Image (tube, rainbow, N blue to C red; front, side):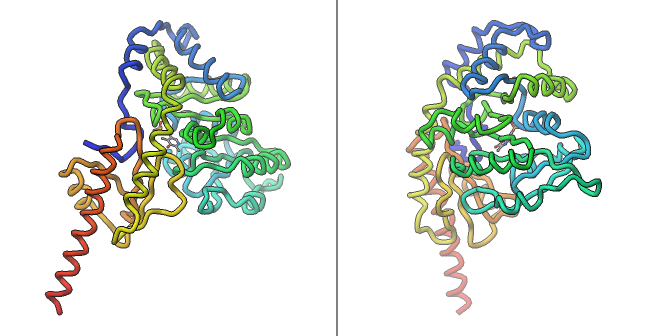
Length: 352
Ligand SMILES: *Cc1c(COP(=O)(O)O)cnc(C)c1O
């Protein structure tokens, strides 16, 4: 199966499995696991942040950041379709009593900063206390411009609010910009990175920030059930991911560009212009699609996914998809839509 649903579907490569098999472990809740400690040290150093915390998932990592930056009754600002707002089950509200203020996002994935400034609340007991802004980079595959990040930092400093990055795919952004990852991470007070997406680890994320911030996040990790014991087997996979799987992301980006090219000019759909910057290709449909489309592709060896309302498709390239796979996937995709237009055409003929 050619699986374009997500980069979370990647399986560990042989070298990663060997690293896991050979990992030295201890009880991480006691701080005794050398592999976890090494992963946290390595991640903090790579991102040039003081400290890091290994956690089971990106959702938990973002949640710990929210719980640490904000108290009950505080508010964070984020994009209207950001992961922290839309795809994490409302954890900020249900678990943290944290209010969310969303703002619009433009075609390049940037928040409207005038709007952000506008919604930051002044100190008044009518309002929730605005404490935090969170960004996402890459944002649905798009790389946030370094000049924009600098502007955001100034805005946060001027308003005395913290800045968190959901950097699930920060390495895709860094590779695309051809810069070390710390040029992005050091703009932020805290950063969450995913090891289990394009970097190919089976599970895990790392939250980075100041020593004090991470100490508090470590408390919240225990409270939310994320304290793990011999987690070193997973941390070893994560360390391998950071050391050996980052530079190859370029191949995924090249494959995404190629897929974008192969899908140009089709009937019944349009590739979103300017969105294919890293590992994702976004396609909007002229007509809503459903399971029939997914089933058609599955029978031909390709797994696609649809957005919630069936109006678009997001394809993600990753380690387990080759150049030949892309050609097959593009062929199946185009065939479905040309077959559809033939059916429509022949029904129209019949009706005429
Ligand atoms: C995947 C993802 C996360 C976290 O996901 P988990 O599945 O909980 O590890 C957070 N933010 C973004 C942008 C993601 O893509």
